[in-house]
Length: 281
Image (cartoon, rainbow, N blue to C red):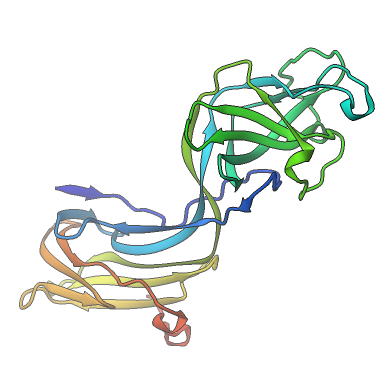
């Protein structure tokens, strides 16, 4: 038996500064779906909980850097002019990075890097001014997850959001990067969700529910409907294409099985009209 807690269908946005395009195809966010509970599995929920839901949002399959890493970026000076100098030093603190672009061999994950000029030591100073952080990130090989290098703009005092590959430097981290995958939300503007909430039993034995539809980043549901259902005859409740078999109730709990989840909308017309909202008591 699975116990369901109240859940939100739209995840909080993780803000990742910077939007650089090193090279290759710019990667779009990926559609993610949220559908629960598992079909044909007996579950239970308390009054006020979501019984069944189906929805989506758009996110990046990003990464999370778990430790602070440092590197020197390429060679210093201007070799084309015959000048050489000390290569710049950079630091990446723990952060989320999203996949901004890719080429045949690598994926470029974008985040923030800290530049250190001249002979300044690499010191993790929490008081560093935001203007001293630049767009950069990690380049990871598609064939070897352990092949990780830091990349950042070649001209460390100038930021161009569309700089080409030849204008950034790379350097291998002095520390072993600790990285794990992370889902980073881009937007809920095109997202949608359908959900059924249990409101509890009525005095005559009927059961009360609320059906809701969400679309985009609106704070309020696009549509709400009160539903009253008597399970004594046919125990299967059908709502907007979803079918829920009521197995029983006890106190404020409901025991049920989802036979079919809500179907995904094919277009905006698949949602109920907002003009037909049923006021809640």
